[in-house]
Image 1 (cartoon, one colour):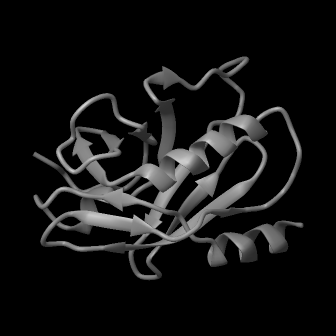
Image 2 (cartoon, one colour; image 1 turned 90 degrees about the horizontal axis):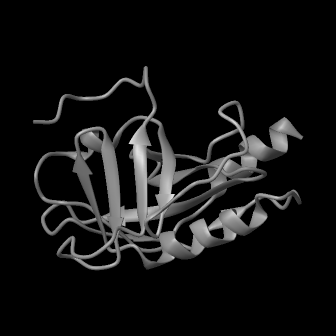
Length: 151
């Protein structure tokens, strides 16, 4: 099963992302945990419960992670001059559990993303190119992740 999950994760694709012009792609490197979706905190039963994760692979132009039950991912393109990024269709494994609804919402929000802004140790995903309104997704850098210093 682990081999199948690893293979699927390597082949997976996402839809609709943008990044700001300031800096290179290294500011998006690292492992991220999804903290909020549409302004609402991700509810976990206890601090030991799994978190939903996300990361970019700029060599393979793939992004994805693990939800509560399934791994997911997508290919993406990034225009460094405009900061606009698009994701291909989101794919995931199909293990059933209580977290499937949150994973479906995550997939839909990724599909709507047009812009990603880095603020400190957070990534904010917007459905417009002006970073206006409530972010679709808010992600936090996982402690201990190698990350370039962003000023």
